[in-house]
Image: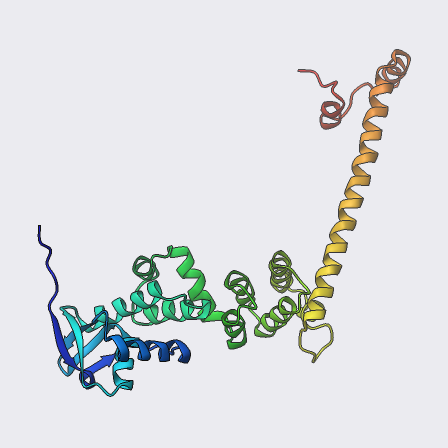
Length: 290
């Protein structure tokens, strides 16, 4: 059984437009050039015909190697797709074949969104969930350049960067990123600090108590961490007070149970017309009547 083999044609190098250009590692590129110069091109590039020539779908490195070797023609497979489809195919091919950095991933998603695709369509084309694409687009819309650079350098995971980017104040974003980079906070604490800032802003408390300890000063990693630590201590105190109150209530309940088990005490209560109890208290003690 024979298979259809696509035709390979020689295409002028100068007539090919790179729709989705990528920066390349110089050492790897030089190795590719050396390989092609010695053994030739093992796999043709893929292009689509346009009004002005051709648009590259797949094979930027091979094309640039031919340009480096001053070749005028390159073997190519010509497919029949629109310019827009060629761009998307090129983008998907690059992402599938390369170990792209987190920032490249973010920018690729943003490029598709900027071309008018919905989040669902972007996810379908790149093999990501709608929710994941939404996270990336939020980072693009709300994250500052330093935050994106930190993602690119691998200093901040993109999931942490997303949580930081959700902070409404740009200076708070920077302080949170600084705190994470310095190892002052963990991921869960980033989320807690951001929510603490948001909550205090929403209920009308002055941001200076959280992000601006003193008027005119910018929020810092240290000031946010101190605020978080104070909030943690406050909540611990609430837990201790609640535990103490619960212990005291248990003591009262047990004492009443023992007293109400004494017939003489109950007789005394009846004599004083005090034999009934509020229903919640009676239920708690376990003497409420059906």
